[in-house]
Length: 336
Ligand SMILES: C[S@@+](CC[C@H](N)C(=O)[O-])C[C@H]1O[C@@H](n2cnc3c(N)ncnc32)[C@H](O)[C@@H]1O
Image (cartoon, rainbow, N blue to C red; front, side):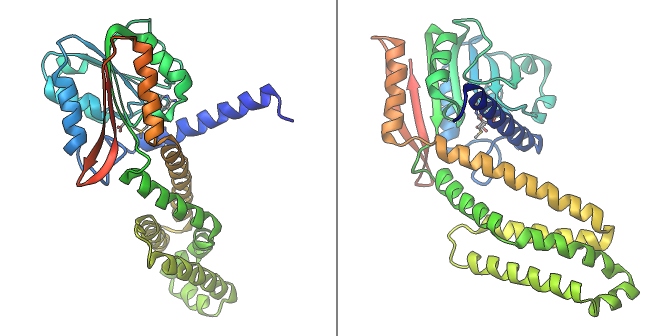
């Protein structure tokens, strides 16, 4: 039987693992987490939604961004109000690394505040602190039964809410499901393990004598056959997959590690490979969270209803599905 203590320790390690996975992700410098869909900042329907929301702000209003990451919404806000304007505070479970703020002029920089290591479920702010609470693919990652009352607590009675939330039928959720399947396949496959076994042999290719010995080394032959078999399995899988990118990226990365072994030796190539395996594990956690947090129609209607009833009888709200290139991308919910 599981005791309360076991449950809380387990929950804590879940939070710690996710914090680390997201911190490492933001540390690589992306502005947001949908780099394959939006090369710069959010654009199209999502960019337009946020520009409209921020354009309606009055100067010196206070904005709280839940699950802010590296601050794409803050960037949209500052691009709109480079001199003077609303103040933005972003909270995130992880520790974001928003390098773009180093380029801001002082007047803009002092209106942007990142608070890493903060849970949406336990907001460290006084009641009625914010005019607008926003979240772009953020609040739904939290435990909504605890974060929603927290949001209402820190929102002023006259405050507004604007959220873009993962849609269960959206393109990002579809792609994430495919990638999770590929990651599950990789965890069962021998590909990365057999690649690690090959690296010391690649490191010997630089030396003429060692290379000659390799030809007659049965262990080298066995390692190569093992790797070839695993590679063949991946190739078979790539053909016919609608979105095989993750699998082709992994193959390219392994080839790079082999090149690194030839030019720099086995230890740095093995380090690169094990760092990459840790990144794949981080991806798995992030993708699992994304898929789990996506809301279907019943889920988003329940969230809308929750915020509306917390706001009281005068509440007004709107709910739309946002599409980009004719593909559903997320739910847009406004409550005031
Ligand atoms: C998909 S990213 C979105 C980041 C950003 N809003 C954007 O659009 O790029 C989700 C973010 O939510 C954060 N997050 C997940 N659970 C959270 C929680 N319970 N409280 C606060 N932040 C959380 C993650 O650390 C991550 O940075």
